[in-house]
Image (tube, rainbow, N blue to C red; front, side, top):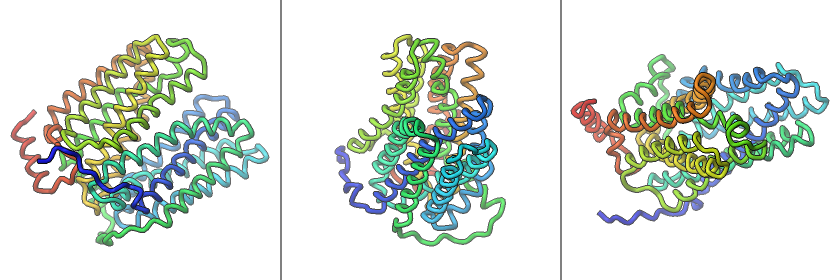
Length: 425
């Protein structure tokens, strides 16, 4: 076999993918800017950290409630229209908040209701966009497409909060209005995407069809292993939730230092996304995924023990880069190992796992820091992540043995499942 990597056509030749990327970056940017504005508004009106925490809860609950319904709908209807409809709803909600805050009399209950609507729209939008991506590029380009799409999210994560903070200085209606315009641009780009997709079979809504995504994942050790590895790694390694404590009490820096610390993982992830676009992973991707999770754990331990701002920033950049390697491999494996007719339901479950790990990871880190202290909590999380990766290598040998990011046919999946049963635990 020729060891040289395949050089596929440039992504920009595919207009539909370019429009998808534009839609995704405007959507993510608008969401990040709006998150800063809404957070500041809620805290300014209540002065309560508890109320601020409820903002995250009102975003998370719709995702939990709607996940399985979202997947079924994404596999029955035109995914472009679903995403565009969600973005239009977000545009309307943000537009109403923009005009509602002009007199400064927005009630906190209205803000919570708006956040719930935004959370419900995002619950539909995120997994549907993930399910749409493979239809826009050839299979040989999917890894690059995932990396470029991930770079859009990381860019928004870096730019959005800073932009939202700067715009908020002129009043909350300004960042809210900018967010609404971003969602309008995202919706417009999504509406003009053209894809060719065989209409799915209109199976009736039933308990079995709604939860078939879970059954599909359970029967595929590669997908189950990749998703669950990410779940437990993020759950244990959620040290970024403790950054304010590290900044003030360990590194003895101010808000500017906290800003750098928050941006560092996204900088690492964005840099890795750019690198993966030019140097795609073509061999031993299963091992590379486990290695990336182990590096993530090591970087978490180094950051937790560091008393130097520079070393802490370097550790967080490495942490973000390693996490992005794992994300690109996981998403590519999930997309290419899933039939198009099931991608909506599978990506909905995947999104639930990611949301759960992020939310519970922050909760776990906070509770453990309260019991053991912030440094032991971070070290424990990093070591736990490493142990999870090592255990998962044994628990999911099919995932460990994946050599390339290519479609895994059903007969290959069956043979991999037999390999799991023969090798045992």
